Amino acid sequence: MRRTIFREDHEKFRWLIREFLEREIVPVHRSWEEAGRPPRCIFRMLGDLGVMGINMPAEWGGAGLDDYVYNVVLQEETARLGITIGSLRTHLDVVLPYFRRHASPEQQARWFPGLSAGKLMSSIAMTEPDTGSDLAGVRTSAVLDGDHYVLNGSKTYITGGEVADLIIVLCRTATSDTDRRDGLTLLVVEDGMPGFAKGAKLQKIGLRTQDTIELFFGDVHVPVANVLGEPGKAFRYLSEGLPQERVAIAVGAVAQSRAAFELTVDHVKNRRMFGTSLNSFQNTKFELSAVATDLEAAQALLDTGIIELTVGQLDPADAAKIKLFCTEVQGRIIDRCLQLFGGFGYITESPIARLYMDARVSRIYGGSSEVMKLIISKSIGL
Image (cartoon, rainbow, N blue to C red; front, top):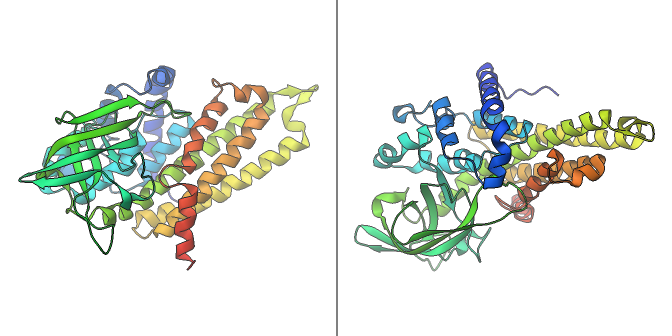
């Protein structure tokens, strides 16, 4: 079905990024999986290409293009090639919007040039060992002491934490007897601050080039100048930012589903069983017809959400519907596609197996499917 979200400049960007990915990343991607992350230089190369600063203000070295569709193009192209560029998606789609919305002029001058050039990488630390989707229950705390906050606590499952220079940490700076969502603050912790430690890299089922670690804060003195936005307002900021994060996850889910579908169509045309091609069997035709239909439905819902997001009108409940549907569809599609690969689909070196392993987390991070259902149920009065 015809898609209408892309303009000519988006398609020019698509060909630019496709050529870069095929030349610089595809030949070495396997070594990134073995290392558990891409080399730091790749982010600076993307900075030179203009990718890192495409949504950043022009006065700090960015392109000044406040247009999420460029991020969509980047995700679609990486999925098409079966690659993951470490924590790049989290950095661009999830973390940078918080900096753009809430950084003070002094913070912009300090951090934005490096972020735009790919010299500074960022991450966001919300999840704790005992707190996942219930962000109001975080125990990491910060106490004001003169011109610093003294930060104590820990975070876990932090995407990009190992390579990050700047980490936005959700912590409690005050308590409220009426609303436990009050008193949460975003502090920007800089790599190397005394008392701040990064734990060992966590081994995951999939997304092997994307570093995920634990973070520890022991009496870390964070300057008041590193408060992002206003103290105590973090829950509101997170509520504003989560719709884009959830759409970004859905973009990856649909793009990876499409990659799996195209791989499988090519496979069944060339694989022979019982003296005939696999695509000649009725079961193959029916399975891939169902996959194609699911894929079109997910793409149509997602594109509608992208349009709403770019004009600032995407409702949190609608973002939850998009993430829920697209990630659940992703699970079904890639599972059905792997089945048609037979034994080869179970071998980790096969591209369909890597897509299968990467897909499982989509229904967990950014808010699990169960949390999405809770959000949706509230929107319909339940």
